[in-house]
Length: 78
Image (cartoon, rainbow, N blue to C red; front, side, top):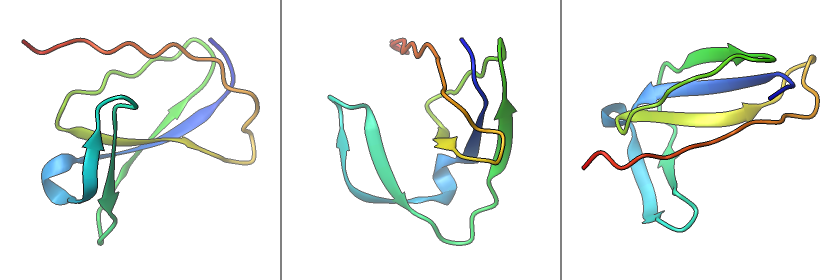
């Protein structure tokens, strides 16, 4: 795992979905309306855990961004 990345995170209850959830890509788009996102700054060997109520927007570039190598794992909450 390496590189740097900024991820915006917000509570899903504060967002309005746009379109349907894509289960194959595990992706849902939301309308951005005056939401205060929490910025998470990740660099080499850092990790983040997101729960189902955490809407996150990964790969936000900054002046220090470079190639990102990361591992993404999804677990069922059942």
